[in-house]
Length: 178
Image 1 (cartoon, helix red, strand yellow):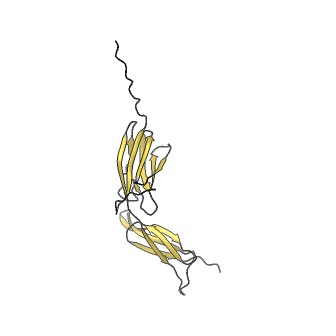
Image 2: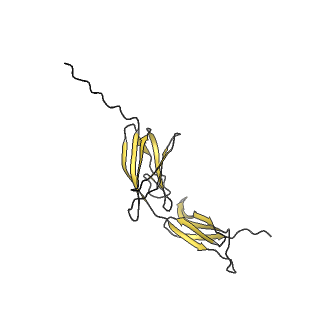
Image 3: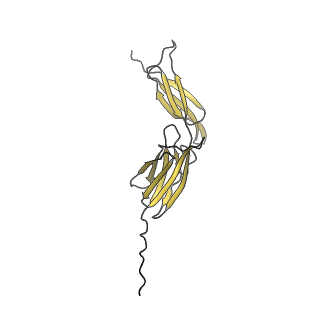
């Protein structure tokens, strides 16, 4: 008698990308973090959100070269393979059947700069532009660059989220019409 032929399962035509996102300071999982898996050539960008345990999954990814970025309100964004919020990171090459698991993003909580702008009489300055400037190395030297900005409210108050660091504040009074 002939032995039965056992069919082989079909080869996977897609890849899997999985991991988790945690708070870099406390190590606690970060739910509601948005992850974006973007191809380096024109194709569909995929997004997903972490669950209550900070886990994420892209279960059916077409083969290609991708970048992966994690973003959550109140935290610095991070790219896979990046060492800072402004780093572009490293691409992830995916082939059919690949399973890239155990990716861990450790997001840095943002600090908050808050205050109230008043004029020389102590009255609130509404609609004033408050800019936060931080140091960055560009063109071989240390330069100030914008790290965040906000307009003051009717009561002169503002709140700006920034990564931890040292900053200079600049306030531009609102324009007045004579």
